[in-house]
Each structure stands twice: as C-alpha cells, then as structure tokens.
Length: 166
Image (cartoon, rainbow, N blue to C red):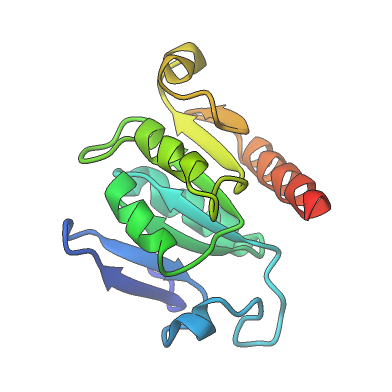
C-alpha cells in the first residue's frame, strides 16, 4: 500500500520488507515509543506475520487506520527476527508460510519467557482443527476470509485482556 508513514526494513532471508506503519524510522527507542508523530497515542502494537502481501497489507492498513502501530514480517524466521527489534503486544500469525510456519513461530514464542504471554491470533484459510493439530498455544483463531469488525473485536479484546493481566 502507498502509506507515506510506512517504514521498510529488508530482511536478509527475504526480499519482502519488514514494514512498520507509523512515523518512527530511527532507533529502536523511537520504534518502541507509544506516540505517533502527531503526539497521538497508539492503541497497541501488533506484529503481522504472513508471507502473502495480499493478506498482510490490507490487514496492516485496517489496523493502522484503527490506531494501532503495525509491523509486518514475511515468515516465522523474519517474525522472530522482528521480535528482537520491537516488542509487540499482540502477534497475528498466518499458519502456512515458507521457511518457518506460524505453528513453529508460535511454539517458539510460547517457549521464550520474554514472549510467552504475548497474545497470538492464528490466521488461516485452513480449518481450525488443522491448526490445532500443529499448535494449541494461540489465543484466538480467525479463518480467512473474515470480517473487519470481527478482526478488530478480537484484537481489541485480546489487548484489553492482556493489559488486565499486567
């Protein structure tokens, strides 16, 4: 999407960039700021991990327009690398991706004490039963295609629930 506020960082493993929707393109400290360039607070920070730009770009735009700071990665390996740079409050994982699928990334997030409590939304065109056979540690499941209001409701509820636990 042509978002003038998007910052692209290229992954070594993939020519598709990590994207950051927001106004910060400098240091990690700037990326971790909870305020955009206009001084408005972000509702929360979300990492979208999906190998299909046709899925992640609209999702990124919807969440950005709704007040979230959004980062994207093209697969599980890129997503884990991104987790070393920013700390999202919620991760949306596609199930089927090359190099590392969403189930494996989810297992790694749950095994790491620093990321084990970050809510995970599994996002797939496959059935939830298929996802559940490979990974059970997710907090919500959205089957593609889904409605925008359903997505926003799931994201909002998980972030509110997660904030209540802190």
